[in-house]
Figure (tube, rainbow, N blue to C red):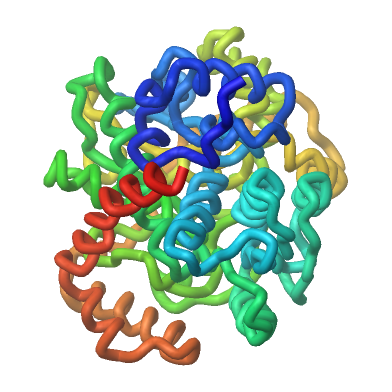
Length: 451
């Protein structure tokens, strides 16, 4: 049997048809039969076995708008979330640069969940010990999956909104020179993966849908990596509008707001270092309870979806493909489409980061909070959350003064971690981001040479 190369290039993650057919075939088999086979690294892609982007186009009966909402599905990635992509990219860049050495270094993964799962997963497949640093109030399924992949947990106080504490703990652990952090909030492999792989896949995803163009892209920033897809989308479709989504309860980018919320994976009280705010046109606030209610509708409210005109088979296909952040992204896409007055030929693209598999406990908690969840309640939620979504709580960041707010927020967040004002100021020009993206070709060559 041929030796398994240790991982894909950026180009191969974008287009797995570039892989050796034997490697691709064995990887697809392992995805179904043995998720801990290292060849699963070659399944880190948005593409399915037929080399098509995994996606759904939501019916107008559900969204209540004319525009097409195209949702790329992250649950098909190994480990169950697209966050495995930037985790792998950050680790493999460190390996080929000689900064991370197998047998010597322990991998640190600051996260609120999915990136930590991805860190534990790729570390297991590449033979590294992994420590995931995350808040102590996340869903129990996240902790369980990290442990299943051999990851160790270092928990910090708080919830989704307290990710700063995970960064501080990571800095403390990095005092040991044998610890190397896959720092998703500040390292640029995260940006490169999403601009090249997610952004280019989004452009493919709209082929044959509407006018084949992208009018808008929405994503809730946790690390803001996924938002980098907007850079690639705007390079192809300059008129496209990019919206960052935040919890209504923790509106840090929009107005400096703080607070706790339930949308796991987003809204971390900061403007992350790798967030290219030059490309953010709008910030839209989403209420956290609506995202959890939306998960309940998708998973348990098939009849409610059918009652508004959604095909039953399609409704059933949604049950396992969305978590709270995916619902958040869909609600943001609907709001953006309404704001822009988009028509039936227009497309808004977004992503479902993960699937339902890590949110059983979230629904158990929701069920316990409501005394009555009769079918009529889910019917009402379906109308109120999806069909009646309004273009409210929208902040226009195309104005220079609003951009300055984001630059100021970034300085407030990152000067304390040793970054200089001169470095942060260099991010004010698109050439900085284009130079970071240009390194994709360099790392393609390094990965091929190393394997």
